[in-house]
Image (cartoon, rainbow, N blue to C red; front, side, top):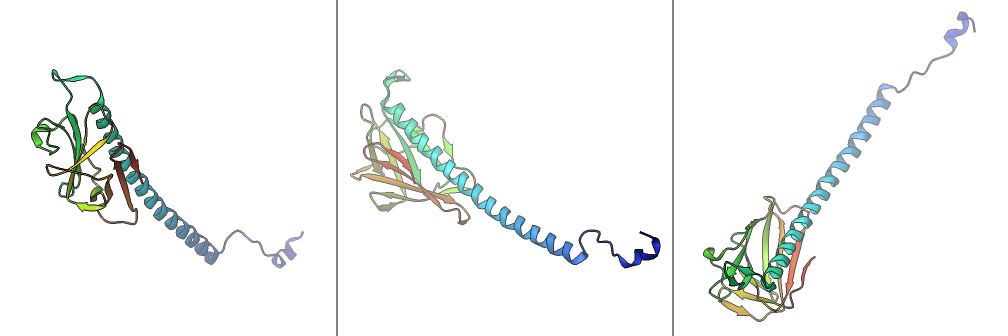
Length: 187
C-alpha cells in the first residue's frame, strides 16, 4: 500500500482509557469478593480445628484415665477436663485426688491447654441447662463420662461446650459434645 492511502486506515493498538479503567474495576471487585470469602473460610477452618483439638484432648484424657499404667507410684485416679466460661480461653486437665469431681489448681495434670487467642468458650450446657463451669471426669475401668458442677455430680446424658470467635464474626460456633457413654463429637 502506498503512503498516500495510509491515512484512510486507522490502527487499533489495544484498549482505550475507558476500557482499561472498566477492566481494572472489574478485576478489583472480583479480588475483593475473593479476599472477603477467603478470610471467612480461613476463620471457619481455624474454628473447626480448635474444636477438634479440644475433642482430641478429651479423648486423650479419657484414654489416660482408663489405662492401666501407673502415675507417680499409684494407679491412676479420676482424670478430668475443667471448662469455665469466666476463664473462657483455657480449659484445664486435672487428676481428681480428692475424688469429689471438683477442679482444684493443685490437681492440674500434664500440659495445660489454651484456646487460640481469637476464640473463646461461649457457653456450657449440661443436660441442656446452661452452666458457668463443668468438670468432665473419666475413671477406670469405664470409658463413661461423669459430669460435675462444683462438687455435685449431675445426672445428665450430655455436656455441650460452645466455642466461637471473640469478635462474634460470621464464622459461627462449634459445639463439642461429650456424652455420658464417653462419646466425643464436634458439630
